[in-house]
Amino acid sequence: MAAITAAVPAQAGSRSGGRLDAITTGRIYDRLLTPQLNPDYAFADPQAQRRFGADVREGRIKMPERPQHRSLFDFLRN
Image 1 (cartoon, rainbow, N blue to C red):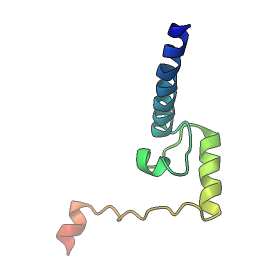
Image 2 (image 1 turned 90 degrees about the vertical axis):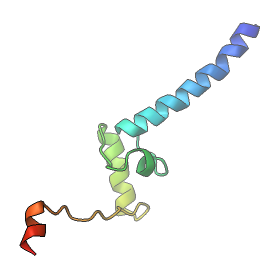
Image 3 (image 1 turned 180 degrees about the vertical axis):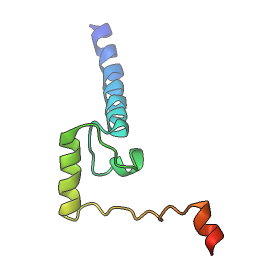
């Protein structure tokens, strides 16, 4: 019985690590963790992408504005 109870906390820790990995790789969308773990919002799962799109449309998530990419040519022109 002691071996069974000792195995439960180890599995609980691995589950949360797996969830964080899934958020990082875009398989799961989480309103709070995705901006931190997947800042490019690259999704591998269509359902995660749909949930993200719904949150953006409803105003729950504000997309961060990125500066426009400027090439070396643009800097030399000025």
